[in-house]
Length: 561
Image (cartoon, rainbow, N blue to C red):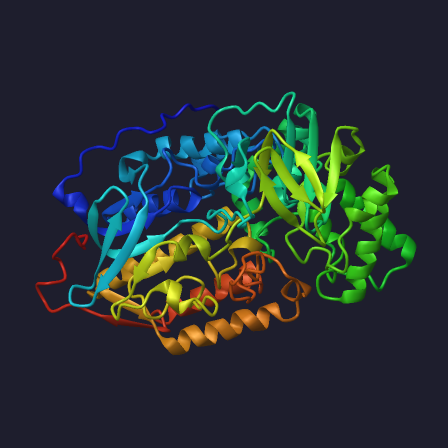
């Protein structure tokens, strides 16, 4: 299915009813769209504000060559509507950005969601008023909206990070960031192109950029672990088999820690012979992508098991890359295999065998400065026509603290999170009543299939708001004690994992000055769902609720019972 949606579409005139609603939602990606859909179903009035000119979130902004998902498309999709699951047909194992965007656009049209979204508009600030139990939200367009509830679907990887390189503004050539790629085709034919960074977006784009550019320079500070994606067209028989009982397929996935169904061996890499271990690694390598980590259950729990998988991986890279010196520079030094998010690529290492590709090691000196015609690194001047910044994101917290969100005492989330984010259930923040953040710190978002996690958290939020409405409550807030307990739960879940011992965007290590703490909940999707269910079943324990005096609660847009 294809869809061509208008961009920059004119926003309908705003009437008084739209200036006072039950909920304001930030973002029109997977989370924002589902929040809008579910809140409407339960009779709440909603406004969604989206910075872009169309729906899509991550897949609206990230249009760089090779951009695609690393979760299988049959699982990286909504499951709230069986009709939607049956009617949409994915074409590849790992869907590309254009296909993912077309899917999200189809969902927006099918469920008439565009009418609730104000595009080309950023939420700049929000203030909670304790006398009315309402948020006042201000936007980049100058509009002010009052809402009982303020809910973020603004994304885990949506606030781009570009380091403060010396003299960057001197460069007169073209420059791009993979997270804010132009919405038109970019031609690199005949150009000398520099890519800064070797994270996931660089790994996906470098092979395609190398095919276009006259010469490609890859500026690498820290090498990454990359496995082949083994992407392929989806077999129609495979698709039919899954669709024959999609709900059962989804239910099995939700039983996995990652909410992602793939071949997984829970056994130990230390308890088998070298021959059996090698065969298992080989089998998982051929499956490709993130499922490679399913070769053994202790690869991210035991340092010796991790060393064994690292040695296997090194052998693969040394066999692929022709130049031994280049191969060694592409191998991380001392890092934990899979400690950072494992990257899935297509012909990534093979690209370094091309004569028009040069790997530049920045591990010691970094980029010294930019010049009008390129940059200087390691004492060498590189003449460039274009630079691609593949320098990642201020993950998990960046999109939240970018807004000036203040609680009733005037303190902001940016201030409260200056020593690390603290949440209750990864959803609520003490000191900020009637506020929810989806897929953020303290939640399982980046370690569970994203869309599955979005649906679970959204359903929980909407159930909570419906419960409040039935009880006559107009204010909720997580207690300090409940939040502290959850922060300890998140830390305890992370402790056994080798991932918590790495410098990565999971800990904020890629952002200078950001307080380092392992932000996601890594205890597994089933355990998280169980915790959330227990809270709800016990009348939302860990929250305190209040009601405005009779006659005041309905003022300003509260939905009817």
